[in-house]
Image (cartoon, rainbow over all chains, first blue to last red; front, side, top):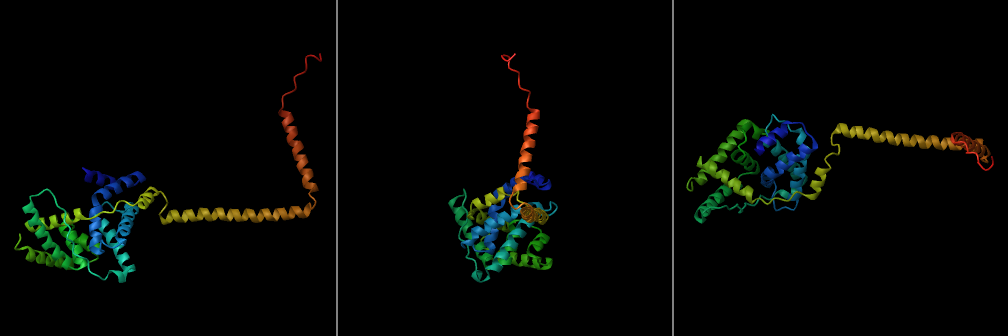
Length: 184
Length: 110
C-alpha cells in the first residue's frame, strides 16, 4: 500500500508537501538500509558517521526532484549514498586505511533459543565471509543478495563493467556457498 | 534457494541491528527551509535582483549628493529655500481652506 502511494507520489509533480511526504516515506523505510550501506563503506564507530548520514539524508531530500520515475529508485538512492561516501573518503583519505571491524551484532527476534543459536552461528559464518571481501565486493553482495538489484543497476551504481560485475557476483556466491555448505 | 534466504536473513538482521541516528534537528530545520531556491537559475535571478537594488541605491546616493551640492551653490544662506518653503505652506493652507466647510452664521448676531 505504502509502496503504491510512494510510486504515485514520485510520478506526480513535486510540491513542497509532496516532497516532505516522500522524504518521510524514505526516512521510515530506507534509513536503516542507508545507514547499513554507509557502514559498508565507512566504519560506523567513527564520530563523523552520524554527520555523514545526516548529510546524505539531506542530499537525498534536496535531490528528490531530480529523480526520474522511469529509473530504479533504489539504484538512485544508493548512487547518491555511494558518491557522497566516496567524496568523504577522498577528503579524509589518510584516516580510513584501517579495515572495517566485523560486526557481532545481529538482531534477535521471537524464535526458539536453539533456532536462534543456530541462526547466529550461520550469520557469523556469513559475516566472516562478507567481511573478508573487499569494500566493493561487499557492496555488490549487499545490492545483489539483499536489494535484488539487476546487474545493470549495480553496474550503474558502482561504475563497473557488466561482465566484471557478473563474474564478481559468481565468485562471492561460490565463496559463501563453500563456507556455508556444512551449516545449510 | 535456502542459501539465498539465509543471506537475506543475515542482511535483514544486520540492518535491524543497525543503530540509526535520529533525524538531526539541523536537518529538520533545513528541510523546513526547503523553499530556499537551490537551482542555479533561481540563484542567478536572485543575484540580478539584488545587484539591481544595490545599483539603484548607489545611483540615488550619488545623484542626491550632487543635487545637494548644486543647491548649496545656488542658495548659500538658505533664503531661497526658506521662501519656497513658505510659499509651499501657504499653498497647502489655501487648498485646505478651499475644502473647509463655510462657517455657520451666529444666530445671536442676527
